[in-house]
Image 1 (cartoon, rainbow, N blue to C red):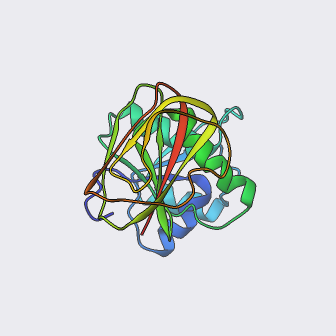
Image 2: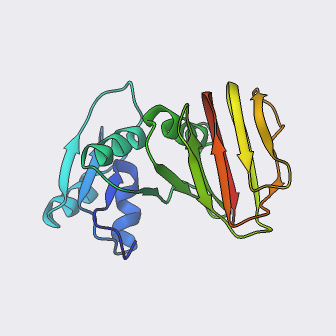
Length: 186
């Protein structure tokens, strides 16, 4: 975070940011998960408050889309470990919904999305384990730089894709249709 140009916090995360002395630039969300004291501290710290009451998106999706509007070159998401399982799953869906270069950093891995006609080259240390999962049906999936490579494959939602191993310093992943989630272990 020391190299971040801009820090955006979702409403429920602002308390942790204050406790960890993280200087937030923007606070975004419907403000349903923040108390008045934290909100007032945010205002006193010159945090720009962006209230978005659209219940069609969760606060993480709102934050990713806002960062994309700011033309962020990279969107790194932290602090979304833990909590309710449905909220954790929704975080992955936010990556898919937003179709940006956002990446979630978890304690044990990073998670990113590979979408239709987007090439994903990811630097990785050889020997690192990773998993590649299809959300629904994905066609024309290609994976190079791994122990188990794919060539114009069809993937469906399943456990297939769990625990592959990088064999080179770059993974090359493409898909012609559908959405893939890439988990790279630390």
